[in-house]
Length: 380
Image 1 (cartoon, rainbow, N blue to C red):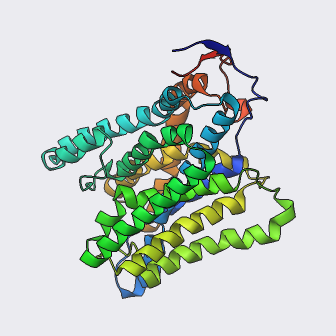
Image 2 (image 1 turned 30 degrees about the vertical axis):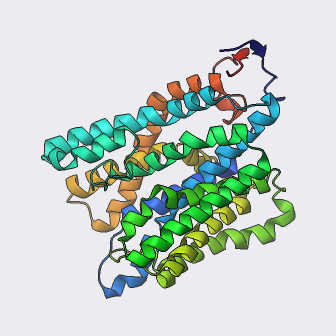
């Protein structure tokens, strides 16, 4: 384990918690929820369907934000400790992601077994157990949407080592190389006319969002305060949903029911999605005075994302007497209730344990209820 050395105080370690990023998480979840809860059909609903399809890019926003936060925290840790503890990084990620993820997988497998679908879905469940849920075509079960967790975990395999051994300039070069590789894959998909879902689930394609978040972290280390650029940032933030709509409407990226389009449209579409996600994060960085409820919902957004499909399933399949117009808000309310219970009684003990392995604290002060670790073993 190495020699034991005393950690700097919390203040010296440079706490990084920004409540406005919880707002970004909430917006990303609401975009995904709008997609999964809306599947209108017919020409009369074409515009509405395009809006629903654009909500898919909430997942890209999640990925960009994740890379921004992970890269920022690792770079700060490297500045403070002169290295990155890869062991502690994986401990933190395991404690944050795995408990609820595997619980959701277990419940979904049980429900698929109960419905008699487990035989046809077993290979996906096996792939998801080893974080390969995006490699096998994901089913429409209670955990199919968790293929995205596999992509994120695949990013975690390589990124802490990259930050540890590369300087900032070479880290930026690596991010740009990933963007080039993603676009090479998109060109191939566009030429071959491969189905949209296969392109959407490709690890390298989705890594473009992580590369964009990393570049944002490298370029924006000290966000300016909100008041000084208020009238600039508000239009930037409001432009993002229109960009997403245009990507679906005119470039036909993630338009439901069609195969991939030409390589130029694919490349431009994914670049616009990643760039606009960075734009939204930048527009909100440094902002203040967000409603506490909105910040809290962003804080539990992981639970919201994991549990919203079971909530939608329950409302749509068990509450037939409820008007279709009320099912979406009811499903959203149920999702919030389930995520709140999960965060309070299931996730929080793991989060408190996770704090023991933090060098750069990333949670609000009031949420830290365990004593600070006095020392840490330097990495091998």
